[in-house]
Image 1 (tube, rainbow, N blue to C red):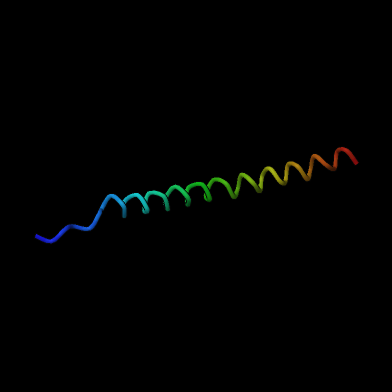
Image 2 (image 1 turned 30 degrees about the vertical axis):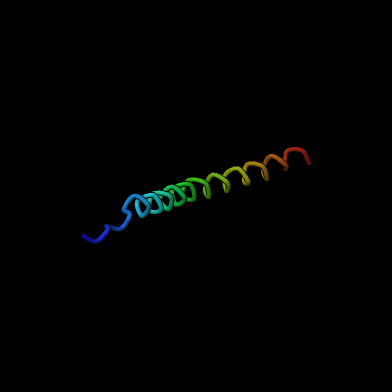
Length: 46
């Protein structure tokens, strides 16, 4: 009987990719919003 490929490892790498993509999906707009807020707040102190 041939050994089966390790499906846990492929599931883990697939899961890691999904987590990374989810962080990017949330993180990019969040960073944009924080940067815009910071830029507009700087205008208050000029």
